[in-house]
Length: 110
Image 1 (cartoon, rainbow, N blue to C red):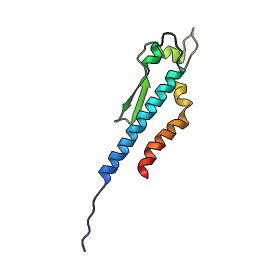
Image 2 (cartoon, rainbow, N blue to C red):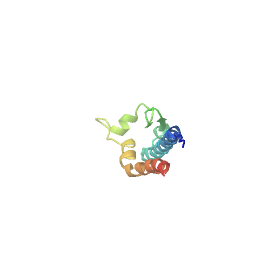
Image 3 (spheres, helix red, strand yellow):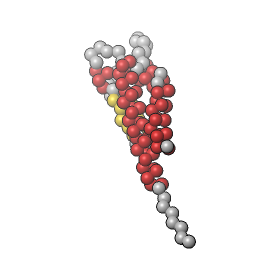
Image 4 (cartoon, rainbow, N blue to C red):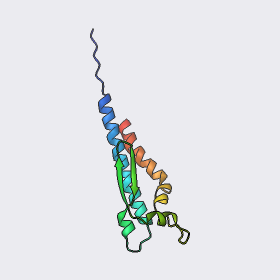
């Protein structure tokens, strides 16, 4: 009687990695849209500049802007009150972010 073994580990890792990437992309676009909807608009420069980038190696998504005055809008100054847009985009949507993660990652477990 002979017995053979074939590992599916490589395929499993590939599917999980793809699910992670899809989840991060969806979270990035979702939080980006939420941040844009919370941005105060003067000329719209800050709103237009908000983007997201997935870092697959770190398994993270970076959401932000390169506009130099963005931190002053988010955090305020000694003369200007804070008008947060990034922090609430995440904090007020933690449940939705977790749902996105579960949707992509649990799909691969089934």
